[in-house]
Length: 431
RNA sequence: UCCCUGGUAGCUCAAUUGGCAGAGUAGGUGGCUGUUAACCACUUGGUUGUUGGUUCGAGUCCAACCCGGGGAGCCA
Figure 1 (cartoon, rainbow, N blue to C red):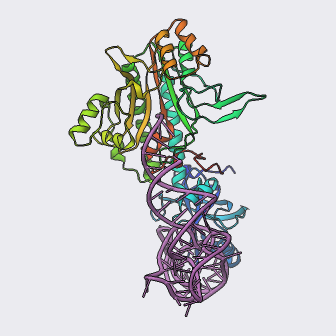
Figure 2 (figure 1 turned 180 degrees about the horizontal axis):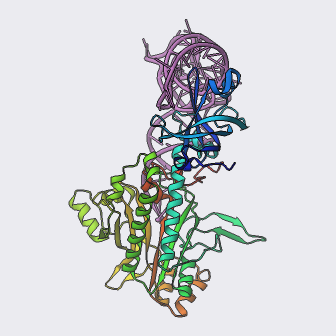
């Protein structure tokens, strides 16, 4: 007999079913055990009675340790007393693999303990919900990109040099006497791909060796990076808000149950509406000063400043036109105001901070050469990148979206470390 | 790298001025009317992160070190 998934039980009431999973919890009285079975698709209450099994078997079933792998045979019934409204009256119990004493209990645990047991922590209800939301975000991105005619182009993980020349990179040996670096961004390669296929994107892991120690940082995280040929800053902002809006819609549409498990305030997500507010760096600085948060024009916005700006709006806010001095060398300068770069950061609501950074790229060879010198970067390293400006350069742009930061905001989680299956952080590489 | 903060039972935590190291939970045993983090009773469980110092006496005070957590900078 084929096994039934817990998620399919509501459609199987009245039928005999075989379930396979892990013993999540148990409550017992003199004549009954209530077994909570977890199979990855959901959790269901299963009823075992002493009358059906006899004293010895009944006692043994009451002693099966938590997280043992078990197979249960029984009949599905609708019952209001069961969590989820469906339960299974069990006629057969088989222990597939008896568990040792399980370290993670129903009570609270500290982050150190949980992170050291990430391989087991992943089984808990909230973590399962979070992984499903992450999956939905990634699927929404891919579906939506393809609907818009973008082509997925994978960027390399090994790179010969820094992409931006700013961040600290992880260095690895690359055969004899050569060094490679783990990528910190696929953007430069996406620029090359955009000149080949027009509208492209990549979605993959990214590595930053900065010793950042905050709830918003991982050393390895996933980034979604679209890039468009024949596009300016407005096109980039239009795509950013449409993609984010689609992601929110898809999660609300398909993962409502998981948001509820995580006790997310759904109204906060429903409040996200197009068009997103757009505010220039100029205006943001003015308004901050008007409200008594003194801030001098020219500096980069810090985390507390971002929190203030995002608190003005219920939707993500797009801050554009940063001082060029605080932005990367490849950012296009505003022809109307050379102090300003055509970049945009998207700040998530509720203080979650920057989830997107991007903008229009410098497409003029001479200007780009000048910037590479100013930033004291190696012209040799960027020879191929400069070629893109030699052979049919066009206005183009794109952005990078931090997948975990986006999931963190959507799910209302405290720390990005829970939003990736196996987080890599400063001082934490295990498991 | 800098600032703040913590390390006591498998886990989450308590321990007054320096004076016998405790509770909940998990595990074990027994009980219980279909339980909802079930409940009730009993019970096992300790080199207080490490090393050294002060003291009649240190979980508590001092020093160094080790390992975490939060934040800053940087960024997604």
